[in-house]
Length: 81
Image (cartoon, rainbow, N blue to C red; front, top):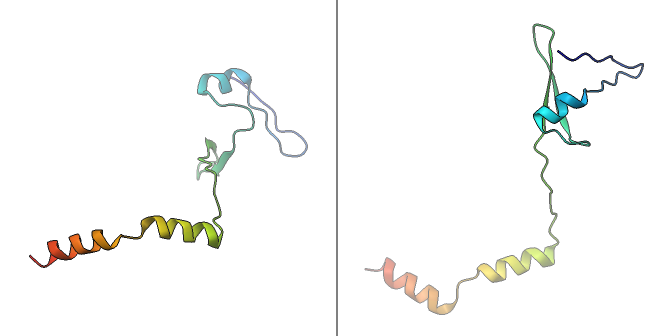
């Protein structure tokens, strides 16, 4: 069993052996949760990059998704059968 100490600012250092065993890298964002029995649970958070699209970029997506006249005619023929 490993031990650690809570610092004056409430910070906790996780022993390297534990980090290595779990494959947790430095700078990993962690979720902190307390349980009814007084335990503290740490879990790696799933952090995903978010891209904010400009109006121009959204217009590009819409243009790429637009059906051609030929595609519309084919779909109408299928639906009218």
